[in-house]
Length: 259
Image (cartoon, rainbow, N blue to C red; front, side):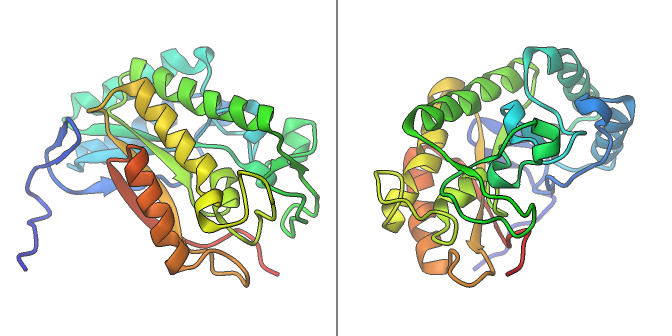
């Protein structure tokens, strides 16, 4: 099998990247007050200047109650001007830009959001030392709409792709994982049912952004905790994401807690 040249162009859906090098979404620490700052813009501009095919803005929160820390961008109309400025700066250097769409679920910080976090099930969080509120159908539907609205917003801002964060124990990962999803309704139980909510998010985003706009999904192949998601069920989740309209998958692993 021939190994592709990492410096050769590649297509993701309707997007052509100048090479196959992608700066992964990783917390930058430059979003004071939850805003796009000049430091954030310069950080990604310099990454683009270095020649990557695409850079990824980390932790774009789709709803205020999903924030895991105070200095996190909430994707709302107020964030649009800063996001446009960031996308323009990256494009001027010849690179593309993506953004993670995320919700912290039961890892959201109660001190930041001013309420109990939401989660797939009422499972104790060893990291926050709290129990979440198990989500009802209306809250699930509202969160699907939040992911959809966030994808429309960032596309309007000039971003070239979105990365739906369904790994690392955040909200969508909590529905995929048998450790955090103890439900016995249509959103839990079998691996197929646990995929339903995350796959519905991908499907809704695909309907909102169109058939050619790249949708990446970051997902665990192993939670790395006892009773968590492992490779056999990760394969089922990957198939569900593909059927729902994902362009590519970003495999990862791990939960930000130990027990």
